Length: 196
Image (cartoon, rainbow, N blue to C red):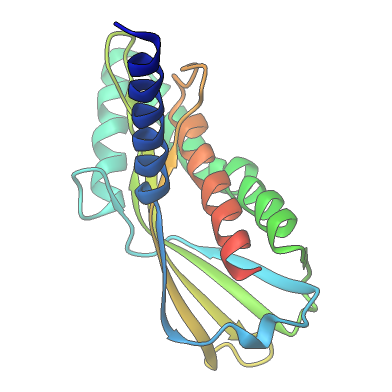
């Protein structure tokens, strides 16, 4: 292969890969306007997980019960520990990762006293998997509401965030929580940039 052709081929392939990555996650403003946030330096951030679908399951409870039963069948108590970690990871890993990257890229601080609140409602979680020979990245979908902190029924804006990918570049993501944590980090970064 000639060097010029090889370079052109590599350039096209690299551009295609970057384009696919950029298109993988989508943020859309569905209602309202983000103009009220222009001069705000802080925002209150809250998370909800009600009616969340997980993987092939329409109800999170069905997914959790299946995994818990499978793990307990392999080793007594393992499923119970997994279930606890599944819930604890929200406060310990997912939410801090989101907040850290959102505030950095939106150039805002997280404050309970802020005039506006961002409610990040996860509607779907794909936990993904990594079993040595094959893997599937995690991802999340969410509905995002910007509301008045003093009157949360007053919705200023509604956005959707689809397919925030969760993957680690070294492939060292055997832990479900690690993969999903990366999805929240990516979602925080992208949403912060979008709002900025």
